Image (cartoon, rainbow, N blue to C red; front, side, top):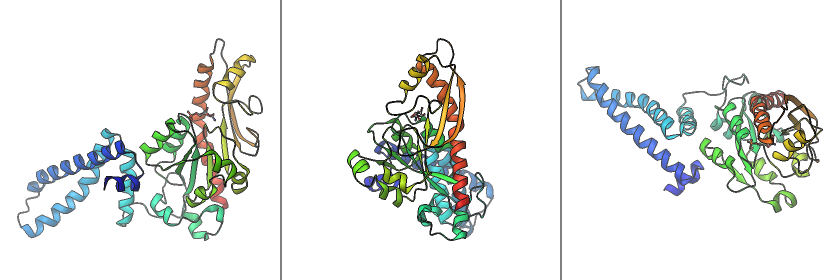
Length: 324
Ligand code: GRF
């Protein structure tokens, strides 16, 4: 049973344990509170008592599990779990005709039932208005940008992070994905470069937009063709300088400092068949200070990334949503 739950919720054994603990504590607290509150209603007739008790419990329970989930670190899981339950029961947010980022409209469950991919372009105008753009984040590092993107697009509204794609076992981003209840696709070299580039996996997940956030492998032509101007990368310097093969992480910052640059920054750009080469969408700069180490500069650049990447991705999402 545990294995089945793990697969269903796509969580690690440790996380499953925390989820079950949350259910158990939340359930016990609900029962306890229900028993304390009922006498205050003054209802004595058993025929009325039972339904009122059930209604009361129904309202207290979501609140209690959410509360407990804050302490067990499972808030995001339970928030989306309860949203799905609400939808199944016909309450909570359902489709909205507006695509405004924060007013919700559709949530994950509703969207997955309309899994036609935007790339397949076969959806009706009504469906287009309601659908949530699905993002895949490709990352193989610590995942701080992935984390910011997940937070920004939670709860899912205009867009949602539907998939984390990773090529490195043990990468920090995997844990981030697990904590957020987002499926992880571990990819392997042979299929990525010589097979279909895992295109089938992306298509079956209904991915509309690919967001690279610390992914070091070159994107194969098959994916570039399948996602024209729908693969975005962030680079920790002001391209076209300090980009290209081997220019990543500390190497970039070392080169910037070594060259005596007075400023560095970030570049967000579309991905084409060359490293760090596609059209630039957004750039912003920060100073390089005297005595800066690569770590100092990396910290400053990371702050810029966290502040701007989600917002820029959102702009791209809006463009996609407008095209339909
Ligand atoms: C970022 O600096 C980004 O510019 C580069 O890879 C780094 C990823 O950092 N492409 P993190 O894993 O998101 O913290």
